[in-house]
Image (cartoon, rainbow, N blue to C red):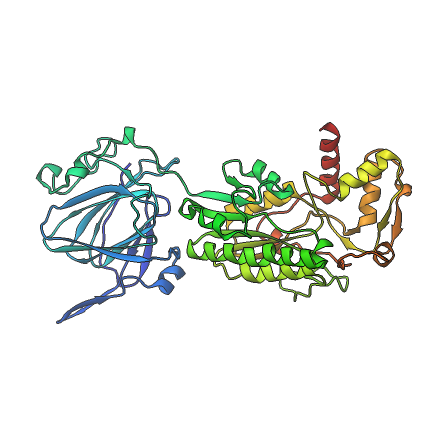
Length: 473
């Protein structure tokens, strides 16, 4: 289909939607007098306020055309483009060559000094000059590379049927443009992908189910403690990184060797990833922990409460939150008591119940379980809805309980006597042991997450489903 918009000279800066998703037309105020004219061709603050994405241009190019009728395109490139005209006028034609339902959609418009257009990555760009001495100007947010992926469409394609003001037979075209394929032979431009780091962990395996089309990197491919593995990734293929990797041995982190390894992974390595995400305009999703708090008091912790970690692990997670907050596009999911596919508290209690062992379990640490399937669903929700970037507490819903309460639930749900579980204080349980300090209050407020439209499953329901799945496995 084709959609043409006239380009009147506007009196104020405005943005107009087009028929191609993500592509917008910008009306630019042009101020003239007897000497000529002036305009703010690109004004980041004003244009972002109107809804233009902060696409981060890194290069400014000018294509000068000395004759009317010069025709260029149709080229789809792996970067966003902001197009305007410095002198003269053009007839612009854009074709969506991205994979998806809008593939083949056409938009045309006349562009002069008083109009600009934002062209998303993968949308084919072409134009025809309507006046002599036309200067076509465009900002792009990546540097040209001969190894980048490009997609082309023939200017004469009968399917999109662009109505060129000057017949193509009378226009000036390049030999390369004449040889471009028809739409039926064009391979759609692949979308940017999501990279999951830490794909072999409990959460990583849950994300595999929730985002099967993502790329998954195990420790051999991407290790945050090894800069060379980050350097080997072609980051231009991605728009989102989910960091599900972390050093989580909280007791071992209190040792000399463990402290070094914990900081190397959770802070130093994460800082490298944060720099990569800033440099490549990536959205970073990162997992944090209730251990960033000291566990004092009884009220649920909110996302804005002051951090006060007790041990080394908590200190590295707090430092990690500060690092990730410097990435312009970031989501931090602060979780507690994570349960997934692997060794964990629930599986241990189930095994003890089955083997006839009566455990003593701490009863003064209070919080909620966070099941990895629900965390993964929450990540998908945030990446789909795109609420305000920042920190979001994430646990399953339901009453705040102790570890001993959960152990009793596991016993009962697996057909065993819950009275076999004995409650014990944290101080008693860890007396004489080399262990990291645990926060007693792990309650996390979920109001901010609910405000985005996502409410996790009730923890009891999720626990029952988890145990049933484990029994079937």
